[in-house]
Image (cartoon, rainbow, N blue to C red):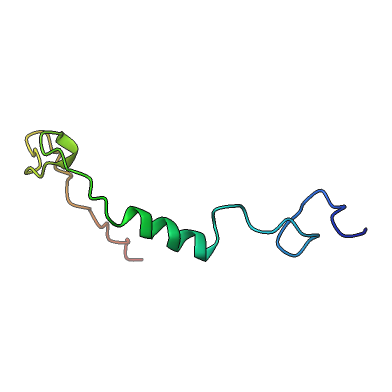
Length: 72
């Protein structure tokens, strides 16, 4: 098969190259643009709150019973 004539254009299989937007320089440029923006955190959202766990409905498991082998 010649180059660029394969069904699976992988890393070393006939070209294709990396997906757009995954390059190192592109990621640095995106980070520089987003660096000045700090999102505000909504503390009223339950996802952003830290609370103690509810332990009322926890289930206690019995201890593991280790059976002794019969002596013969």
